Image 1 (cartoon, rainbow, N blue to C red):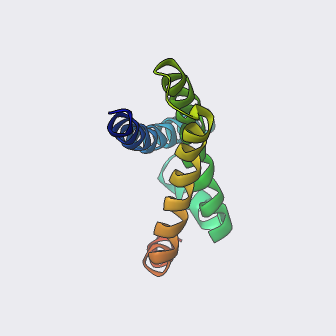
Image 2: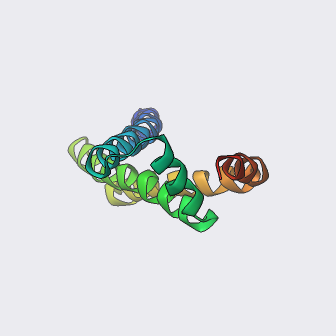
Image 3: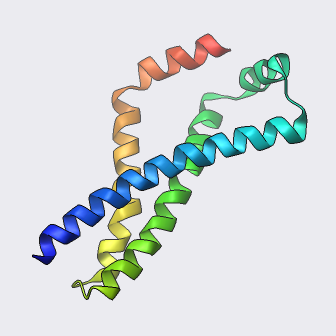
Amino acid sequence: MWIIGGVLSFYLLQKLATLLAVGLFLLAVWMKSKISHMDGEKWDQYFRTLSNRGYTAVFFVFYTIPHLALGWVGYLLYSHFCFPAPAVLALLIPLLGILKAVRMLDENKEKLWAKIRKLG
């Protein structure tokens, strides 16, 4: 029974981390907009100066932070319910989440870079 609970909780924590990553990114955009008084022209300049590596770094920062946080939540959850090897299960949350993101970026990189170049 704990296997089903482990898989279900792992799946839910992964989905929640992805949702939080989007929220964190939108919060950062809102904060930058307020602090830097961004308008359409300033946003256009900002995105034109950001390199492909910059886009990738921004993505991974905003994607990794929630996955690490929910890995910690997963550890507390797995420990509380006496799952075997809670630390290993908790480490899988950010590791598999990041590997999934790398795989998705690799599979769709041409489409993604084409869209980013349209912004610039």
